[in-house]
Image (cartoon, rainbow, N blue to C red; front, side, top):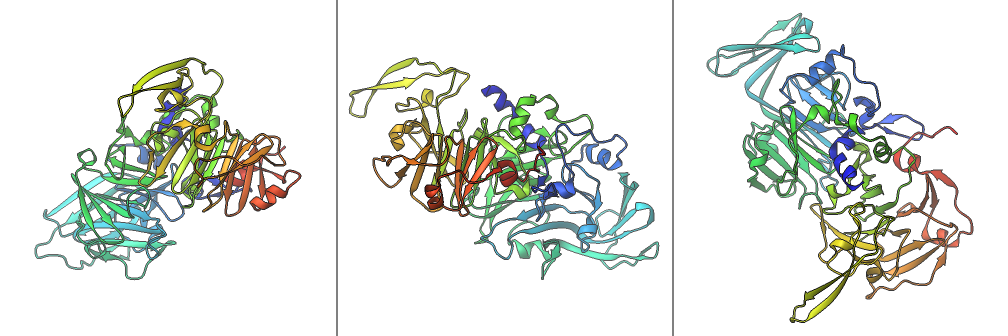
Length: 564
């Protein structure tokens, strides 16, 4: 089973790129304009000209990003696609001030940058001055001061065949006058960046790229943001040929990165805590701090980032795994966690969803994508002081074999270590633990530029918290008080105490819960497909009967109500 879950990786997550739905069933976010994509949905029509143009050829895209609403944008020439499916639209239909293609694009989504927060940046790298006009029949004509007298390129387009012409004139740029079917053309000059908020051009834009980002070369190939927590500080990564530059938004500091694996990115994208570099139709996933590229890349974007006829790895995915990766399947979640920075995670079947970034889409990922070396399933989780605590327990199929090891200690004496061996089909934590780990184990990950496992973990849950096992666990925002639920009782653990010891068993109005979550809105207890909400911890402790059961998928994942 472990191998099956690990093999899903990116293809399942992207294959289940479903639109967000509110409980009433209305689409929003990336699905509203990009079109719904479900692995069991009908294939796009071979007669769909826009789809064929999007999926054909080896050119890839000029730029990719998310917009302010979470819709994924793909730019090519004078056109843009929204989401994984849907028709091409002229760029100036959404951004009327822009005439001509976009060379790079990014969205800055960082509350620490109030003037730039939720801004969409579009870069135009127009060599010299370009005059753009659009004639009838979908023919675009560009007049430019380039080094060659003129050139003409023609290729299939959504509106038939598109022709681009560029014309050079000695002596530099001038506002050429031209007409196309009675239309007036406008002059575009320089290498500029356009900034939009809520679809409106911000005051003072467009600006020269050199004015907005000092030291950054104007003739960019790609750009992508890296928010705090994923990078040491809020930054933008700029790509130009073999060069990668990191620009810190707060200080303006510019650093050159030696990342040969990321040379020649034609477009870049940040999506749900992951960063991608596109080269033509192929893409790489990379770490924004180290530039490291995981194994099994590059991959073809037509199998992952768009719906193309006859393509997509999800065709071969096991149906039972699709259920676990579908947030609306009704399958119970085993654990939830939230931290003081606002990140909320839901765990199920060796995979997880992130809830607070739902505007950008709903997708499940393998645990090891975010928490290195973490395997198996998570039974309970909680956060405290920028650390995430993940509890994993023994399951059916584990053996009771005991291994005795003699290890040399720091003073040369021998230490006896007891380890629980588990079957290969269930990757329990005891096999890898440097300490004794019998039964339930706990692993701690420190947040910041990704997650890093704390040295010395996993270790026995009883040693860490003083409890043998946990059905669920939660901490409330900015609190040192942990509550561990077992059956129909919960016990308090003061995380500042050393050693930690649980308090007396406190009754709760439930015979069993699968998981628990505490946020600024109160405490949520989950059982099966239902969730019970208590306005505060005090309300939960005083309750003598369960709170009203609600559909967990509807409340937390925006799934439509299921008719019963």
